[in-house]
Image (cartoon, rainbow, N blue to C red; front, side):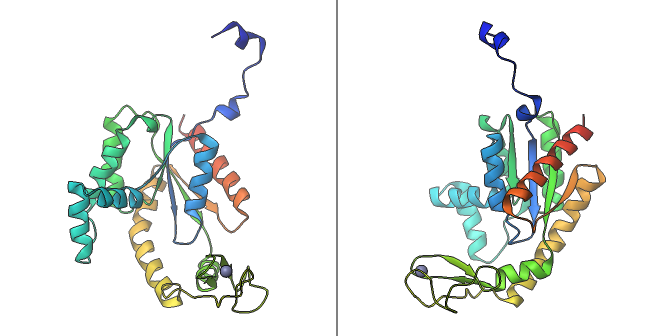
Length: 240
Ligand SMILES: [Zn+2]
């Protein structure tokens, strides 16, 4: 404490709120990545994406990366144990001390149970809390099947919510817009099935322990962030 801090009143407690370890859940297309970026900026804590860690290990050719790539090349899932090891190594770095945002992990009940054990053995005092960004499936379907991309300038349009001025062509240079092959209704239904079957037990796991909140995801981005931050404050208050 310097003498200066006695002159200036301390910042309000609200701005010092730190959410601790946070898990962001949500179906493909709900805007999880965008929200994770915004929370990182607001709280100054890192985002931990197992997808990014995996790609990084593969790019660097680590033992883990080579093993994971071998499995993925054969069309197999990377087993929980391997993903858990990656997360363990990441959580041993010092920048996670004030909290972090897990994105895409834990994806299975086995991973969630492993993480609980790992955190209970570590110095981490706040338990992980889970936020599920919810968007109606019909709305998600429109977001995904309506998506059109300009192959030249990479602008993303949506024929329902953000159509180009002239149907089928880019506003910027008039290139014909493309529809990605995995942006179809069938591909969406398959992805939702996989997501729901893997994630439902994860949601139940945190919800049973009172460490879970649903947040409405079909509002403007800033509003969704505000919902998430107020849910985090509630969850931390309840756990005190
Ligand atoms: Zn364009």
